[in-house]
Amino acid sequence: MDKKFLLKLAYKNLMTHQLRTILTLVGVIIGVSAVVFLVAFGSGIERLVTQQITGSDAFQLIDVGTGSSQIVKLDDSMIEKIKDFSGVKSTEVTINIAAKAKKD
Image (cartoon, rainbow, N blue to C red; front, side, top):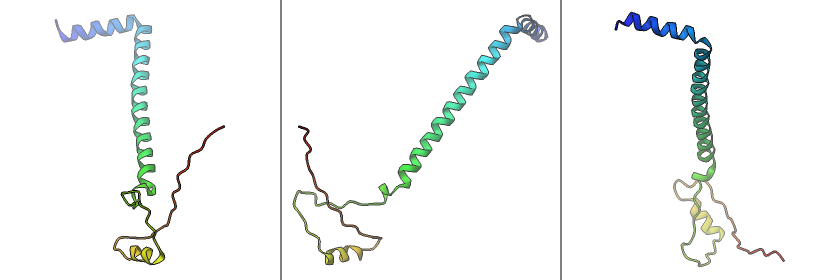
């Protein structure tokens, strides 16, 4: 079969069934658009979450603990020594208290 003949036959079939052709084109356009939108939306959400997590101080703070359950008391002189280490920008004292809540 000749390529010209096949093209004419395809064109004739498309023109004969115009409604079917238009509906098929609209369906394909909507489907492709939906896939592109969802991929772009997912990528944007991923980037937003990554920036919020890495932009916070979560990866810039180091919580130093004792490794065992011994209570270590830090006085002001010890805190000053820790501040003098290279790479330490600031120190902060926090108190962690554990408790249990019970509903009557």
